[in-house]
Length: 57
View 1 (tube, helix red, strand yellow):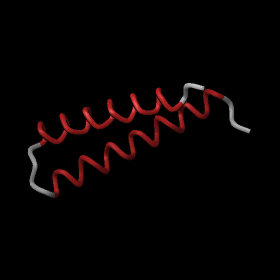
View 2 (cartoon, one colour):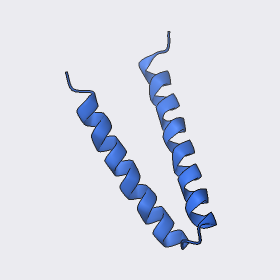
View 3 (cartoon, helix red, strand yellow):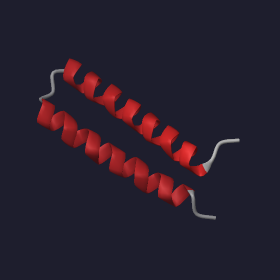
View 4 (cartoon, helix red, strand yellow):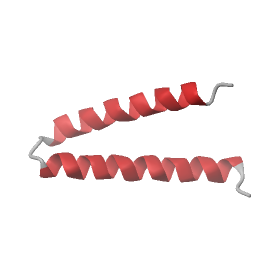
C-alpha cells in the first residue's frame, strides 16, 4: 500500500508527464512556445479543478 506522500509524488509525476506530452505535441503542431505553455497551464488548471470536485463525497 502506498502512503499519501507516495501517492502525491506519483500524481505529480503523472501531471508532469502529461504536461510534457502536451507541450511536445503542441510544438510539433507548429504552435509557439509561449502559446503552448499558456494552453498547458489552462488545461492543468481545468484538470485540477475537476479532480477537486471528484474528491468530494
